[in-house]
Length: 200
Length: 381
Image (cartoon, rainbow over the protein chains, first blue to last red):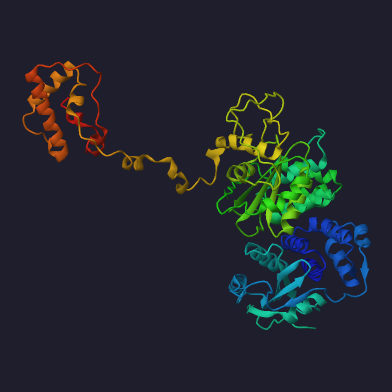
C-alpha cells in the first residue's frame, strides 16, 4: 500500500502544486493515509488534474481502502499519455551565487553510505513558480519514509516546498523525472552503490 | 462547540489560531487560504493531516472542536480518532525578538492591501527564533501580526496579507487577531516582542495621552486582545478607544500604553545594551563641578552651638589620629586641620554661631572620601 501511494505521489511531481505535493508525501511518510484519502482526490478534482489509467489504478488501490470516496475517485479526469514536462532543468541554479551549497553538503553527509540508498543526484528546476532544487534519490526500500525525512531536512535548510524524488528500483520514469535526471549532477551514493538512476 | 452566532469560517480561523506555534506555519497558511476561498473542508483536513502526520497532541476539547468542524464541513469526523489526545499540552516555549529589524520594508509592501481590507487596526512584526510543528521551515521565521476590528474578516485578511507578502518575496507567518479576543501564550509573546509596522499612506496620529479615559463596558472584553490574559487583576474590562479618524495608529498607540503589563512575560528580555540608559549614576560623578575651596566661615556658621561644643569635646578626646584618620587623604587632613584652627579661633573670640540649620556637606569632598561621606564621617559616635 505504501509503495502504491508513493509511486502515485512520485508521478504527480510537476503536476500537483509543490506546496501540496510535499505535504501529501509527508502525510504518506507518517501513515496519515486516512486524511490523504480524502484530500488528494479533492485536490485532483479541484485542479482538474488528469491521471493515466495506470495512475488511476494506483489512486484506487492506495486510497479507497483508507476511505477515499469511489465517486470522487471516478470523477478524476483521464489522460491517455503523460505529456512532456513544462519545466526546464539545469545542473546549476541560475539565481544563486556559486558560493557553495550547504544543503548539498548536508544531504551528502546524511545519505553517503546509507543502507537502502543508491545514487543521489541534484538539479534545479526553472518554472513559473521560480527556481527549485530537485533531489533525485535511487532507493531500494522505505521510499515514503526516506522522502519524508529528506523533505524535512530540506525545509529546515530553507526549502519551503522541497522537491524530493525518491525513485524505486525499476520504475519507468515519467517525463518530469527523465528531464530532471538528464540535467542532474551527482551528490553522493548510499550503501546500494549498484542502484543507479537510469534514463529509460 | 455550540452555535452562538459566530460564522463557521471565523470559528475555523480561531481554531487555526489556537494551533499557531504547534503546527508548521505553511500548514496554517495553506489552511487559511482554503478558508478564505471557501474550501472549508480542505482547510480542516489540512489541519487534521498535519496534526496526524506530526503526531502533534491536542487537548480533549480541541479534538472535540476539530471533530465538530469536520462534521460541519461534511468531512469524515472519524479522522480525529487517531489524533493523540493529552490532558495537558507539553510545554512549548517560543522565542520572539524584534532585533534585526523584522519590519524592514513591509510598510511599502503591505500599504495597498491593508488599505483596502476592512477594519485593519494595526500591523506588527516580529521574528520567531524557535521552530513550529513537526516539519518546520527555516529560522528565524518572520511573524506578521494583524489586528482587526469587528468589521474585519480574519480569514480574508490573513489570506490577502499572506498573498501580498509572498508576491513580494517575503515569507512570513501571518496571524490575524481580532480585537477583544483573548490571546494564547504564543500570540501574547509575539505581540509583546513585536514592532509596529507603519502602513504607507496611513496618517500617523500622535501617541495617545498617558491616562486615557476609556468607557467601562461590563459585558464586553477589554479593548485590545494582546493584554487580555495578563490583566487579570483589572476590576472591569475597558472598551476599545474610539478608532474613528486614524484607526491603525490609534490602536497601536493604545497597545503601547498597555504593553508594559506584559514585560514580565516577555520571552526575550532586552539585551543589556538597551538597559545602559537605566544606570547613569556613575557618569554623573564625572560631571560634577570641580571641588571649590571651602569657605571656612560659611561652614562653621552653620553649626549649632551645642553641635559646636560636642565637636570640640570630641576633638579633644582624640589627640592622635585614629586608625580611621590614617586612611585620610592629604586634602582631608588639611581640611581637618582648618577645622581645628577655626574652632580654636571661635573659642577665643567667643563669637556665637548663628543657628542656620544644619551642617552643610561638602559634596565634592564627600565624593572623594574613601568613606563616602564628608568630613563629619569620622566624628566619634
